Amino acid sequence: MDVRVTGDRISEMGRELSARSGEAVCDLTGKWLLPGFFDVHTHGRAGADFSDSPSGELVRILSSYAKCGVTSLLATTMTMEENYSREMMERIRGAMEAEGEGARIWGINMEGPFLGPDKKGCHDPAYLKKPDCAFFEELDACSGGNIRLVDLDPTLDGAMDFIRTYAGRKKISIAHTSADYETANLAVDAGADHVTHLFNAMNELRHREPGVVGMVNDRRVWAELICDGIHVHPSVVRMTFASNAEKLCIVSDSLSAAGMGDGVYSLGGLEVHVKGKRAALADGTLACSVSNVFEECRNVISFGISPEKAIAAACLNPARAMGLETEIGDIRKGLLADMLVVTPDMELKQVYIGGKAVQK
Image (cartoon, rainbow, N blue to C red; front, side):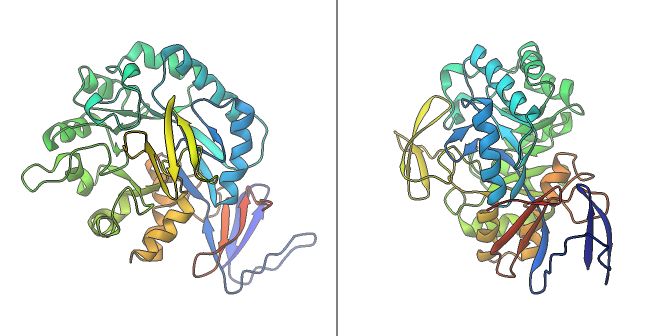
């Protein structure tokens, strides 16, 4: 199948299309053309973080995302002090409005402060709070209305009312919670349709009390899965894909250390120690990853999942989860020409954003 790009979008698809005068031709013999990958949960990489880096640094790291096959993302925040949170949203807004090259920011994934203190993970408990519509409206205004996904613990006071208020206007994700299955189901009934990093920062699956994990086979729900081989065991990744592959989104949950090296880094004001592929707080609590979605997609395939299902979980599924399937996530006429050229063994050869080749 041949693909023609006009401007920044796919304009034509067919067999044996003829190149027009002046058109550049990319011969993909022996290679695959994939949609650009979409990470809906990433805190940063290449030495910068969406929670505490200036707008210029955020624009810089978008090129780093693109070079590893991630052409779209949600800038994911951490739980911070209130005034700092307002400034954080303004900085991300500045990065979104800047004229830069690299991955596209499609909005903000607001992870915190509406999270459960008993499942706080690497979020600072001093700044956690109950769902607060007035505060959320302030933050959304600071972001320019760009908060697309809101993470919250449905057991907190006011959580269900918050979900009902914003469902349909924002995507709501069940996150960092000890909620039982019944409470999670009530949250979905109220309008939540997403689960943040499934298996992490929630109760374990038990045969008499499945908890939030039990929602994975609910067709109303999209679920994130960190597939770095550390946060979730490969056998559990296989089990989860067998249960509901069409609703899974591979995410990195990466921090600024991704693409860097061993050392001590900051995440939401907390110290994170990175050694090899593991990132943890000083007390040993598992923190974010140092991975990326392309690497994790390769992992998923190596775990025994078909390339078709693994690739869909890295591009098409997250696009659908965020309501962006008419813009990205597939190779289809009319969509943005954000594409990857890979070998059959998933070696990344070239990245295109809006039809333009990304410099390696």
